[in-house]
Length: 96
Image (cartoon, rainbow, N blue to C red; front, top):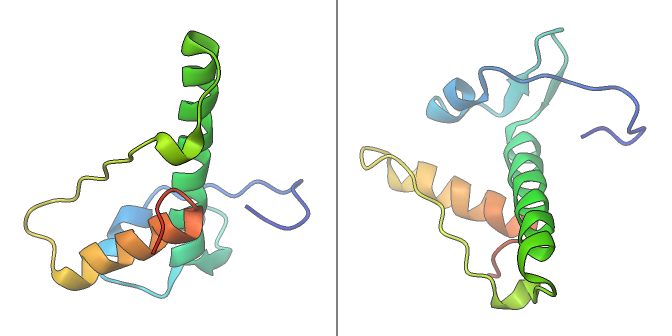
């Protein structure tokens, strides 16, 4: 998640940061990153792993043909839903 790709950061409470719509998420070691980056990079990682696994099982996968479904808690506000949609766009798994 960092530019140097050598220093790992562990975010255990990013969902709480999302609940409170904090600007940054705090890693276990106290370092911070923008919450949008943490969420979008997490979604990108999960999507890439899913595509890899699907490719192993069925062969060639056309990424543009994959339809992603992100569920969010029903009690989330429109602001939270918009944030997740934007994170998915930044992750490259959905288009505008």
